[in-house]
Image (tube, rainbow, N blue to C red; front, side):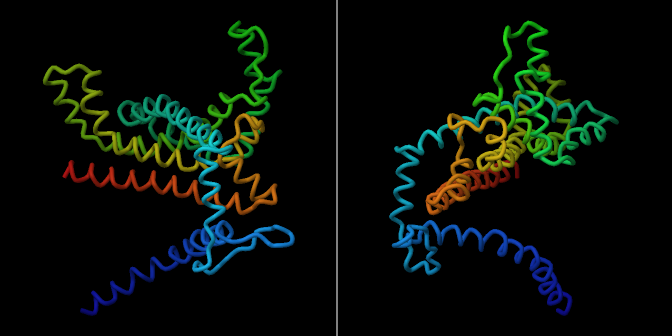
Length: 298
């Protein structure tokens, strides 16, 4: 009895620091954003006044921002963000899956070294890595010099002048390690005897991959996609640095503009809530799919 009572007290005590951390750095700021989004404008200066009492929240402005996001001037920003993130995820899959598969099946003793090289960019500040991209992608940078020398393009490509491909490639460069690591962990846990049994039954390597490896790695793919997509949706610095053009504006750039650069902070707060609801729906789908997959495997 004493051990059970001490255990009941121990685990809540160990969880207390993390709970306080989430309350202080997530729940409280999120509530402050909601208070600004559902508040009211100052009658004289028209600046947003937070309403801390939920009983008096006004949803009029939030509803207007939702309508603008669905059918108004903010709709292209949301569509562009979904398109950029979707293309970046596709490239992450095309790049990350072969790398993760090689690490899990064929790397051997070099696995640790290759994993360290993949994670090496995390040891360098993200801003520093993106600034290095600027020198590479300038009109007289090494990328254009190589493309012209190989006669792929006749003139320098203006990568940094509102080019949407640059934004997508920069997102892939910044977040592809997030895709590789969880996918590698899933592929590494696949029992190799299942693959051997498939080959013993006369199934070729490609069909074995399609009917055995790929289905068994579905949970890892979903985890990798969610872990990669979540920061991409809110990213604003990458777009600002490599493009800075209104033609490539994403949701994060709009939030930054309204919260930091404009006077309509309540619009920025409303966009934060809309983006949060979108990501919550994505997380809910991921959790439900993961539970369903676990039930099928069990």
